[in-house]
Length: 93
Image 1 (tube, helix red, strand yellow):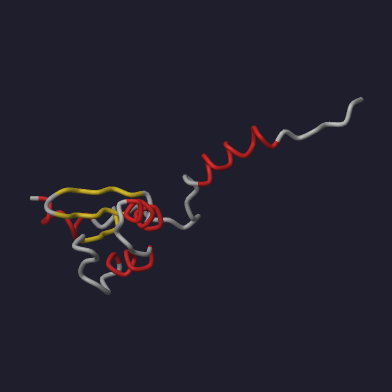
Image 2 (cartoon, rainbow, N blue to C red; image 1 turned 180 degrees about the vertical axis):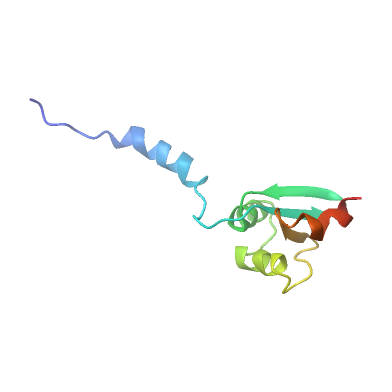
């Protein structure tokens, strides 16, 4: 029996592809509302990463503060947990 050799060239791209989509185990879906447009994100961590790509510097914990009601908005975006429909349904009209 020949020794098994692990080919890392095939594994590394797969790890990179899945690493960006891995979410924290306790994530909550969030909604961002800006100028009547709805932005959906699977977590505050993901939202912060997307905003960072768009050159908007923010952190997931600051988005969470808005969702919890400690802040009103962040960077002009009102953030809510997707499950809290009562809080943001008036902004969608």
